[in-house]
Image (cartoon, rainbow, N blue to C red; front, side, top):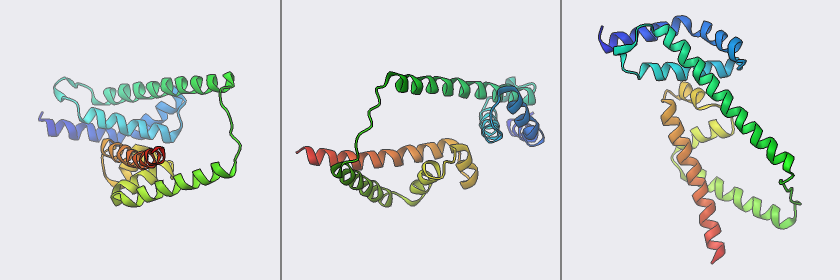
Length: 176
């Protein structure tokens, strides 16, 4: 079987079993249905990019890959939650008063970010806003706009760097 034929087989398996696979992940790993859909999409992307010489059972591979991704996400979420809880428990978070200077500085920083947003390419700005303001995952955005998840991630990262550079340039200018 050629690589293209095998990709079609995997795609067919994905189409026929994605709902069942999402339910499996929800039941087995306690992720939400939205998370399960993102995980299954990511697993499909990984499997379709693999070398097909050794794939004997695409359905089993999709299940195993999806399960592993879900477990990895759970672990990362657990580690992140423990870190946040440790910071809160240590009392190291200091809440600053909203002084007039702080409010003015916040407005200035916001205007710099807005200026940076309008200065970047339209596609990059749109992807950043979909991710950071609409709360969409990279996978959701990728499905919506027809790009790969990796391309979406790169655009969002570049957009964040553009905003960070704008803020840093102002900080450097104020330091002079």
